[in-house]
Amino acid sequence: MASRSVFLEKILALPRRWFVSVNPFWRSTVFGLLLASASVAYGQRWDYGPYAGGTGYFGDLNLHTSLRFFGPAAGAYVRYNLDERVSFRVSGGQGRIWGDDAFSPDYVHRVRNLRFFSPITEGTLQTEFNFLPYYNTSNSSHTDPHLFTPYLFAGFSVFHFNPMTHYADEKVLLQPLGTEGQGYSQYPELKRYRRTSTAFVIGGGFKWRVARRIGMFAEAGIRKTATDYLDDVSGVYADPVVLFYEGSPMVAYLADPSGDVAGEPVGKPGKMRGDASKNDDYLLAAVGISFTIRPYRCPYKE
Image 1 (cartoon, rainbow, N blue to C red):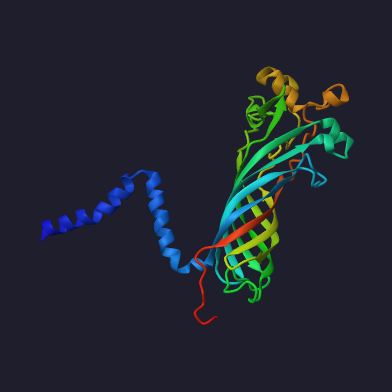
Image 2 (image 1 turned 45 degrees about the vertical axis):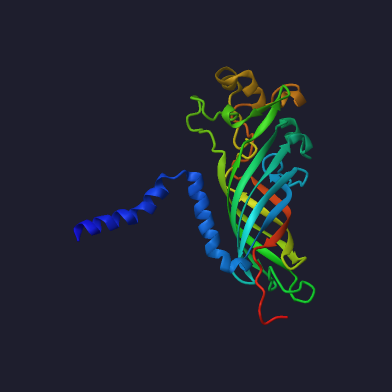
């Protein structure tokens, strides 16, 4: 009996040993197939598709919330429709944000003369609430009610950014330079900021069904981030002598390029460079298409 029990334990352990030893790619593939097969019976609850639009930046280089600073964005999503009112959505995409003091209506900011651009890569989990009962599939998109609905959404996002600028016609990464003294021994209290952060997402949109298995939506959502460094600007000017000799002439210039406008640099050590009391935000506005997975046909409807 003991040998039989040992043999049975070895047999039962084989799947676990294979799962641990197998290549992670195939492990993920098998898991995904199992998950898909488990949900096939409820396929009509799922839809997916791409979206495209733009990302707008709001921060220290756009204090007047101008819509000028928009860059392209695109991504894809998967949505689970709990019922005709509530949905859960996972999405991932990439965009581009930018800002430039040259477009500011304030003379002080134009003299500051800072500029940046940054890619934004985000993953978002959000909940949607439809104001009207909305079905992502039907027998006939011409006869069924509720072909459209406005909706609100809220959720949570994790994103990666990497502010850059141009110097001598070349792209330069700003975070490693420590333009406000981050990472220099003279400023031990200043640490280099992380380029991965989180955001609270809130917004609204409008969705409508254009065919039995196809729908569309248009939406806009603000990302209230947990960082003030989307633009590499937050606190006060560092000592240009420290940046020049401990960093490089390029670091000192990019920290305070105001001399190009004012004739001489205006960023004195300790002078306000940005508003550290408020974090930066960005907006994603997009139009997307939804494709329903295995739409369900009610046997009682003609």
